[in-house]
Length: 402
Image (cartoon, rainbow, N blue to C red; front, side):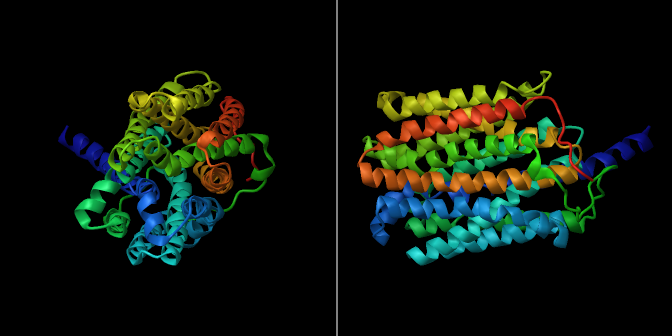
């Protein structure tokens, strides 16, 4: 009896450790991006940037999410997926430290480093879920997307308080180097512990997949991911300044944005579980998009007293869309190797599309002098994403070449 229990414990321990490390890494995949939004007015004042210039500043890291995410499979083949994540966490820490210099050039260089690290980290995560937790994809996708939502909420909600506590906005936005270093250390300790992968696990250095870019299903997954990310990152960048322009303080605007990000945690855990119970997931992403758009309209043009309620709806819609989109990459992939390559395609192209959103909104606001440009743009994003999500939600697998 004791021998049997000891055997189960030895089998369970590597999986628990893998889940904890996965969670810790995911805690770093948003905060360094969302930390800038609540402090943009202070950054603009200190650096002399216009609204359009601030839009470029927020666009650079998001654009790098897409342009550099495609290098993740190459990095994983060279180093192995686990060591690649260690390198990416160290790059993220370096990008955050660069923000201490406080000038435009350093902020742009930081944006490239932060975007590259987070973009490639995003790509590697679904492959690791398929490798280590193929028997529980919905639960583990929910776990690490919840961690990403916690990260996003912490970045927005703590930015203004950290600027007060640490003495300025450069110190606030550089703070996120610390959890990145902690995640890198955790990855190294896990490797040192020599935890074995479960049977059927993916090789550490997967071979490339052929024919993926010619498949309609792959493009549906890509557009669904890209449109949900574009919706989310536009609001990461511009919801706090918009709310401040409507009369809220920097702290309140940041807290409302943080509430939206925090609500995504609940959606990230529940939406994949609910969506996985049906025969397919055709209506999951359109429903989540509709909920998020309704919340956006309430925060954009409703009474300020209802901005908190709008934030809740936005958060649930955005978190649910993101978690289900990531789960679909896992579900539609026959194995971990294909999941990693599909994640690379969806997130590299998706985030390249995404990166243009905040910049376009900032430039359009400069030209029009009003935020009225925002609802039509968001409506178009929601429509495209819903159609793609409906197609990607059908129960089928990617028919790729070996």
